[in-house]
Length: 429
Image 1 (cartoon, rainbow, N blue to C red):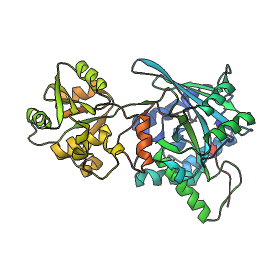
Image 2 (cartoon, helix red, strand yellow):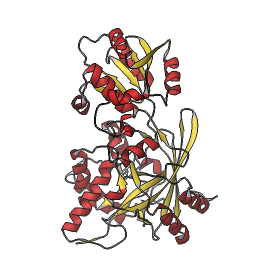
Image 3 (cartoon, helix red, strand yellow):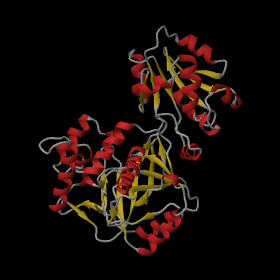
């Protein structure tokens, strides 16, 4: 059974930090060099020093992170709450000109890999990096973005009632204008109701696959050494934020593909070759292509821009998918737009196989369609493929088969901020 528990979260002390926006960050894997520099400059207590720091004068990045964490706790820059709590987390944001609110809550989740489904492959390098940070700090800093399904919204209703008309304990705006709100829920009756609502439900990792696998690896490492938990916040639980798939406000952005490095590529010949299996519709403008792409969301439709031509590509017949996507996978996996694009178009017609995709030899990725079109016009790229977003239910169905989605299939938006709530493990060695 899935199990969540409340915990004594560690939060920035408002008596010491006047503006929380100066100390929180995007997830570690979204922080590039310029972002890291900007975070460093915002505050000497920015969480980047722990999650993705510079070695500086404190040894390597991991010992430096542990040193910062210890110092900030000693100086009460960070304070641990005294009562085990759940932390309601709302994100208010604008997407596609609509105002949205995504509602979830932060808890500790018992590490039960058999009850947790992943949909992305993980890489050795990031897992080793996060494991070294966990060994050094014995802490959880970034959130794992978890999904579960509850059409009755039992946990959501309990938490909505618990925070009704109460001000959040944290309100911060990120660099993209999204508002992040946290409420602390200490009522044991409410917590027990939420625990019961989640018990037995399968959990799906939306974002944070490397962090989850790292937590499991660290747990095994601790048990092998004979270490014991000395508090609920220990190595057998991991901090995570849970969102109900059936709650409104869940946005997944599409990740578009740009193609380059194809010798002797002929756009007209390429589009003509596709007409055997796809309905190729020419569009006069980018706007027309985007409208047709959205209208074809349930029809396996792609947008394409190459050689100055905007078009949409729609699979002629659903029954063709088995022939077009020949890899041994479930039909749920084969019906993913990204699976069809990768295998039936990129590999079959352009020779970009799985190995080339893995090494990113001929492909780059973009969220910004206007910028991507410009890159094709400038000759930096040869063509653009636009996709419709993957749905949360598609993520769930593929994960239920124990399968991993193709790379760059999902981009849950907005990201969960790091530094709102932290957790420190109690371990007897």
